[in-house]
Image 1 (cartoon, rainbow, N blue to C red):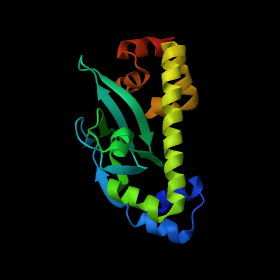
Image 2 (cartoon, one colour):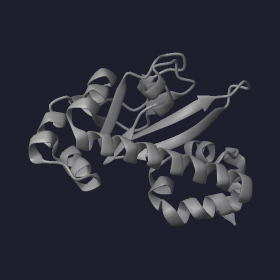
Image 3 (cartoon, rainbow, N blue to C red):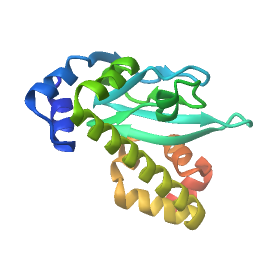
Length: 188
């Protein structure tokens, strides 16, 4: 059951089999349905999830009530409201399954206690923080430097599975454009 998670961690960092087994013991299986919220705005993120199968997104709802998708994560990746997870403060975002999904989750307290117990887990944590920073920086840069058409083309080139697996509404929200604009771009 934890084979994908085991491969994900061991391919990300150098970790002994003994330490890896210690880490894996803290992850529990969770099955979620499409549309199920793992976290709501105002709640504190208490879990770090590995997506064994399916798809999960993190999003905000702006003052006008519009959804703004920050991140979309598919199988063999991790998802959490990272800022809330780190700070233990209420989240400004939602975490939602957008496909029926199977997750392996570790509680916040266990995640951070492992930092003291397993030195390689610190390497994993730093890697997650660095990836999160790079992703957010690249997304901000794309909003500032690319047109809607260029953002769509980049998504199509880098992540074509987004277009195949997600609704136009979710893709538009991820690209920070209206569904109508996305439809126009796709027709070009």
